[in-house]
Length: 106
Image (cartoon, rainbow, N blue to C red; front, top):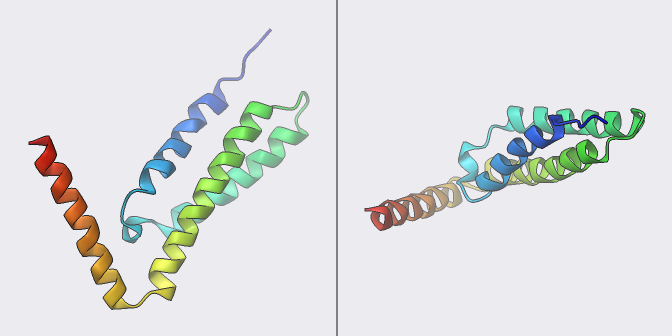
């Protein structure tokens, strides 16, 4: 009886994407996020086609696909649908949050 530990390691990608939901969308890489969307879509298909089906791998990549699409929507909204005034306000907001966090840690 063998276990497939690859999907377990892949949850780290998902955790990073979820953590990034708390950060300024300015730092999101559109190219990397798009690549991760394609990556997870391909591995979801693989997980269903392989015999026996690997539902842990599928669940991991389905969840990651959802997180990456959310990040891609944040990226697109920030860079293509918001004006510079909004982006400046957003930068200030996230800078204030970072400053408050640093002050709490001190």
